[in-house]
Amino acid sequence: MNKCTFISKRYLKGKKSCLAGSHWLSLIGIIIGVSSLLVILSVMNGMRNVVIQRILASSPEIELRLHAEDDFLSVTQTLDSLAFVKYINPVYEEEFVILNRNETILTKLTGIDLENFKKHNSLLNIFNSNPNSEQVGLISGNNRSDFFIEKSGAFIGYQLSREYGLNIGDRITVLSLNKYEFSSLGKIPLTANFVVQGIYSNQIPELEMNIVYVADTKLQEIANSKLKANKIEIYSDNFFNANNYKKVIQALFPDNNVSSWSDKNTNLYNAQNLEKGVMTFVLSLIIILSSFNLTGSFLKKVSNKKLEIGILSTIGYTKREIRNIFFYQGLLLSFIGVALGVLLAIILLQVQLNYNVVKIPDSGFSNIFPTLPISIQYSDFIIIPILTFIFSILSSIIPVYRVNKLNPIELIRSKH
Image 1 (cartoon, rainbow, N blue to C red):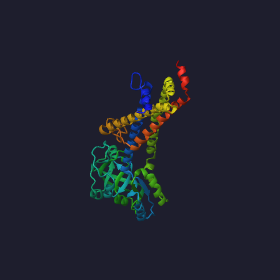
Image 2 (cartoon, rainbow, N blue to C red):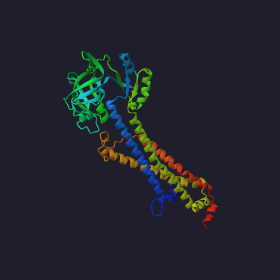
Image 3 (cartoon, helix red, strand yellow):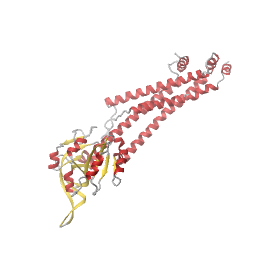
Image 4 (tube, rainbow, N blue to C red):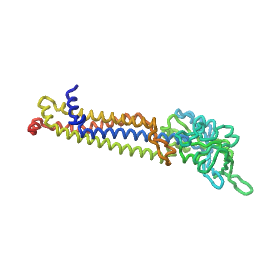
């Protein structure tokens, strides 16, 4: 063992413990700071992923709005030629009012090709009888295409069904807000009847209230529209790059409105990013304070070991070797603190992933997060420990270089 390393380990020990009391405070601070930061980041990542998955279950990654004069075939061919586009889904969408008993419900009818929709979206393709589970899908009903087209089927959200007492088999009448037909009585809003074919849950109550899926051909018919679609939903190879892909599509179609999933949910997305940033900053203060405590601990150690430093100098230790003695102490404490902090974080996260110990109490969030979501990103477990380790090492440099200012002869004389 290197002589400097040996002395470093001896200096770390306390009289009644394997570690001096001041070093315990620094070590515990580093462990708590690292583990807390990693756990919170994993929770925030999990929450973000859950929200994104719920949003994408009912809304596309990128949306291109079409004009009446647009060449539909040319637009779709251009989009298909883009390397990052996995598939496109032409959709016809109109705002309607549902007449239900004595109530009127403002909603958005989305016309889809059911077979094509089921190939690319699990919302109407997976059956899940528990609306409070984390999985999206149909709660009740069926997803038969023949019923959907021939019987004018409609898929409504769980919140809409619960709020207004709509069940499978109920007939609903919809009334257009901006399309009319002329009669002897004047302009009459276009109306149509649908049958509730299925009730879906995507764990986003707002979307469950506002989106009703019907056959695109039926919607075009009642809206008296010649357009095959008034928007195109675009799904890419990476939804986190949706904003970059949006810019590429916007450049190809400068006269059309192009939006991404984050544009439609800007407040929610920004709020989550802000919350993650604030939590990261607050928990980083624990690590910073622990590092300052480490600095104070080593300054005290240097002051208490003046006689030993003087003796080591007189028997041939260079100032560099003496500096290394204290530097190795900081190195060892930092390594132990970071390693134990990472280990503690892994244990806590694995317990939550495997046993769901922390559950969300009944509230507005329990529909979205029944249990505390966890998403472990390996980059966090690399960057955070490295930065903590570097910061802790830097905090020990000040007391280490204070050794240069000490005169060994004066140190020995001052003790006698």
